[in-house]
Image (cartoon, rainbow, N blue to C red; front, side, top):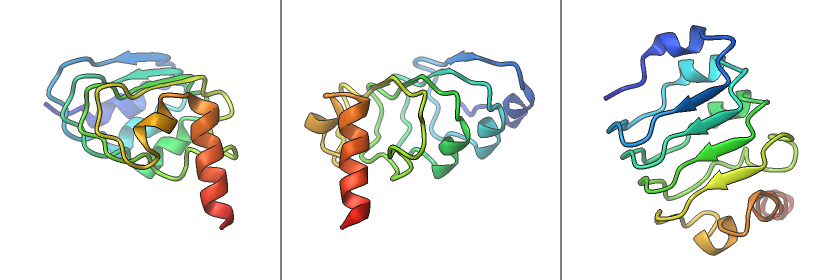
Length: 119
């Protein structure tokens, strides 16, 4: 299944919960729905988080648990996602940042990317 491109037109959409829908790719058009605060994509065969996710400035909760995600994009630093409170990544094979870091929470992920971009 794919997320329809028209979801990007839903400018008042706040919560999008698509658990276990066999979604393989997050379309860039979805990031035009900039009012999204909760995006839960748990239990889908998604393998990448596009950099366009940084357009979701109001995002508070991102669910990627039980997906094929192996790395989070570097947009997850302290300069972006000021509202982000929680990233769900349990049951993934995350390597960048390591799952151990990611499970410590959003603050640890931001520190990881801040440190990585400085050096």
